Image 1 (cartoon, rainbow, N blue to C red):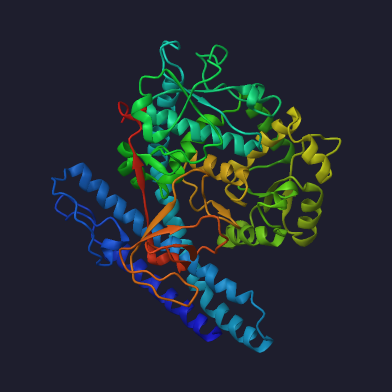
Image 2 (image 1 turned 90 degrees about the vertical axis):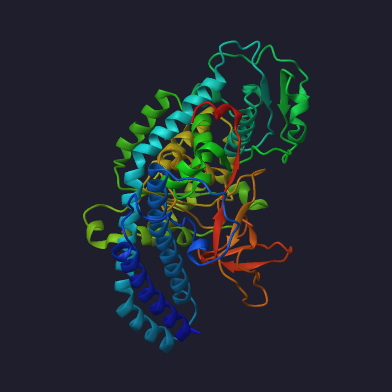
Length: 532
């Protein structure tokens, strides 16, 4: 097995060198006369899909297609290189006998350097893509924010159709995601979304955040509104006020998380590695708008900690989350990714202190543990109460909904989302929210890492992939044919190179991620139809 792993590693290293040369040296530049570019891995690998209806492609569309192909090649190569690196490292962490491990490490040290160079070069190319796209992403994001602001501030509140958002007593991240879910429906149906802040269980919410609407009030709303049901939307079209209750977690509606706007699909795919995350990032960007005094407080915290970039961050969620929703992760499971990030450019890394900002509901244990095991790193944190910086878990749970704790949590979220690299758990609403906020201001596809689940959204659309090759593995694997649709189970712990899901026949199992490509779902959001 170990010999096969090493052979695979060497083969992939060679393959990536060839791919790098072919795609970025031999691949012809896009021009007016170049043929229509293939835009998907399945088309590149000869899979016959249903052909689109013939249409003329203008110069600007051809340019976008060529740009998308070039960027997808770079993104895909980098993503698969990271998968291979994690696959190889997994075997070096196994309990091999000393002789085998010594031989492997010797071969590994001889051959790892060129592979690391390839990964580093691909990262530079990906970073270039992100820099090229940043300005266009900013403009597009600002346009979306302006359209949401317009929807939320109608000229006449009395005649505007409304959607009342209700949500349960749950954690801060959970409540913000419920509001985000309501906002998607409001955008889809062109309704003003209203939230009764009395149902928000955190003290000081209105003090910390800008209101979702500046023009309209929730005080005069009817006590009983017609319940939303997406399948019967046409029946509710003329009803002034409808409500979306939290206990209907899966309403029959097209306007769910991961359904990107139809009229933005092609533009986002060119500019961003993960259109789903960009779109949800824009939704949470509007929901999560701290007031200026909070932003000033964050800057004060950074100055006090001397927290300047580059810095990385981790969010360690424990306490009540461990009862049923997540498992315990030790500090090493977070730090292996932090170490990898800092070692991506060892020569440059020597010029600055390796800073790690830590946010956790278990600081009293996390900070001493991290400092004792990683003395070469500087671990920084902020606590709600300076006189009691490291409280017990019991006290943390009891105080969670107090105003000081809310302010501290919001500051943590801002500092985490502004870091150069983030490691957390997507089983935590906070972990997902950090990544969504990172995506709202750029492309964080390779700047954020979950050590348990993949990105998901409760009541959101399933993550769907198309098989680009036939696959038949071990007994526990998921078998599929090229062209078959695969639904990924995001709430399963998997390394980068593996997924767990079901095929069209309903069979479940694991499969290699490099044999599938993501499929994007779109929806017609009425509130965006006249904007783009």
